[in-house]
Amino acid sequence: MGPPPQRVEADRGMGFSAGEARSTLGTAVGGSAEYREFWSEMERAKSQYRPSQTMNFYVDPAQGHDDFLMSLALVIEAANQYEPRVGRGSSS
Image 1 (cartoon, helix red, strand yellow):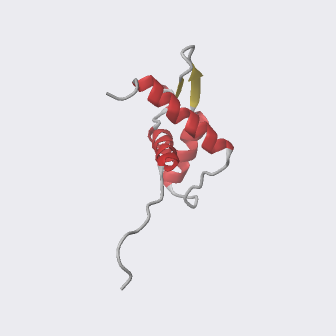
Image 2 (cartoon, rainbow, N blue to C red; image 1 turned 135 degrees about the horizontal axis):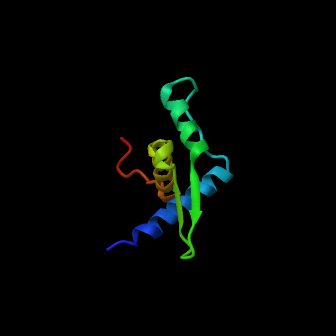
């Protein structure tokens, strides 16, 4: 069984904060509806720090969705876990 959902959410949130602070986030060229929605969600995003040292981040449902926000958090988490693999085989 994996870690509790709040802990996983907190880990993703901390990765997101670190990624943002390092300015490693790139985005698609502007102008598309997705680009505008992405930045709209980023601007509406809120965070809540809990006494249990976990973090919740979200967009208030009354203000819209957080699909791009959550997708970005998952991408950052995956990138932080990435380890390059060495190719095997013969060079013929």
